Image (cartoon, rainbow, N blue to C red; front, top):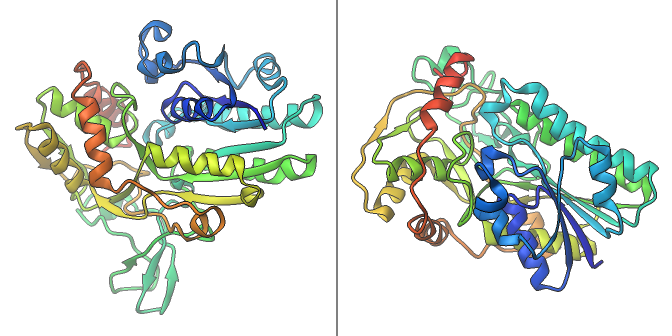
Length: 379
């Protein structure tokens, strides 16, 4: 395989993957809308991400909801890495038609064309997400088994009770790594759309002789991620607040955790999925395999920037947010030989060093919070 199409290839993960593939001798085509929410205005002249790949890839400005754009992009491709999607769990809860039409509809259109339109595609890599798991996997000493708590409800959270519950269990649950066989029960529209994308690709592709691979990415971060998008990316949101001298509002009690995986590791895992036959027909977690709480994230960012802003643990919360989730990396290690190279300390230093070279963007975080309040999702 030499010709690779990356949808959403001007985005954070896509642009980094494109450059690495070019270095390895691949011919890369990118299909991307250059969304202002990610790239800012006049992206073709000002977007940090797009300018990295400009002139190095065959670029098609278009959308995955367009049959014409898909046909143009698919021509002569050996593989597709499908990243193009609307992202952000909070925003997905009130822009439901937009998320489903782009994420589910765009993927359905791709599969329809691969099924019914002549093409040379041999492999499709789909970007799935840890969001399809909803709350992660836990161990109950009381039941002596793994359990999968349901989504947290407003009644408990409004009283400052943020930990997960499981019916019939009174003792605290122990958080454990979530593996690929764990229960799929997304708690947001975004998570539902990623589940649909993954299932469609993994179901349809084998019937038409195309090898599918799905990667359930955890929270991807690193140099180049959007610093202007207030709807997704806690590291970017906090960094922009700190650089604007604004205090950080920590949701819940600050003890909620996420698995942060560095961009270089994500790209390395994805290339293994493209190149190794052992990946065909498989679903993989991609994370660092380590839960980091939000208070730690905020403290380390302030320390790296040398800032003096305050951290306020307010007890605010967003409906649809999960409490904890981190990846079990056993499967991808055994089948593809993948081991993350960057722990959080090392990756964060690379990220914050890059942020310090960037112009300070105006924080639009307050606008996003006001929008969620208006929709009844922020408490």
